[in-house]
Image 1 (cartoon, rainbow, N blue to C red):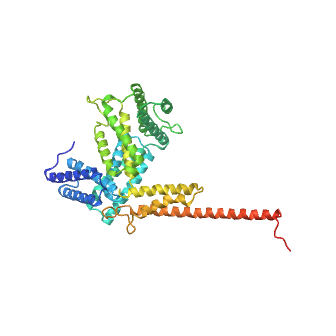
Image 2 (cartoon, helix red, strand yellow; image 1 turned 30 degrees about the vertical axis):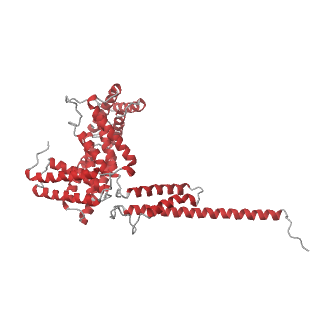
Image 3 (cartoon, rainbow, N blue to C red; image 1 turned 60 degrees about the vertical axis):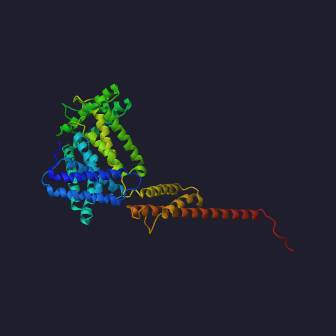
Length: 464
């Protein structure tokens, strides 16, 4: 339960709410690009409030009141703003990624369904984020209060990850392949449960495999290669039982065809969010402003908070059918959201149209170079014109914004532009070689014709 806000913290809460309102208004304004100066101003205002809070709080005590949740919201939104203006390699941009990882790891810990390969990407990403925070600390680019906050958040994430790793370490080597197979079967079953129509051709093989695995147990125990009984049977046994529970739910759901009526509004909302996120995953390079993810984050958190002891309850406090379907869809949404955060490039939204155009031109030029074929200088003209138009946008070698400032991502855009120019030059050389070959063939044909004329004795000039 959330604790009340202390009297000395109320002015700070009021200031933080004001910052959140200003950020929300800035997020809604689609009429113009977000200015880095506006983001930095609100960021420093927020850091000032964090410093004030640190002065009135004890470092050794854990707090959880309305001020903490509001601050978390503001830092999450600020993080998305930093990503929008292209500053993805600065530590404020890491906050939303750390929060997203924390949500996914909490769900993995709750379900107990994961394997080594699931944890490896999180180990790598935590190491990358720690490096970003360390670099900003050494360069003193950001205040100590921000560094301290992010280090604490990352430490919490790392602790959950170590706990998950520790749970896997108790599984004996003989049962690791079985455990990984059961994890994969469970995922396939939950994915089937979330489909509108059950396909028996997909469901029956999984059910038969579960029965086969179950039949290999002796007195409820899994045996090792030499017939020995490995320790720590509980993990695999409980996972197998859970898989059978899901098969029963799938059968019941197939008969009823629907999630329980009391859960239908939640299911419909989650399905809508999932479809929208999947659409963004396909078009994010062209249509996504990172701050758009804020609304999805809030919606998922609200739905997640509806659960009681990990279950969605109805009004009578009963556990209706369809739990696995809802949890699968919720976790799927969290996963897509996390991938969208990771896909953000260190390029300001002002430069993204140019970066996308260059990316398209580069892809086309690579295709022409790869597959070759006959082409003329006229075929290269559209690409050269596109590059000329992009080149003409530069001032003193930089792509400036409308207000004259230099947006983030200049290096990446210039690298794309230079690569496109190099590809055009390579194609020009290929075109010249092709023309030289054509001239050589024509010369050879002329020589062949002259030789034929001489062979057939064509009369030459008469002598007197």
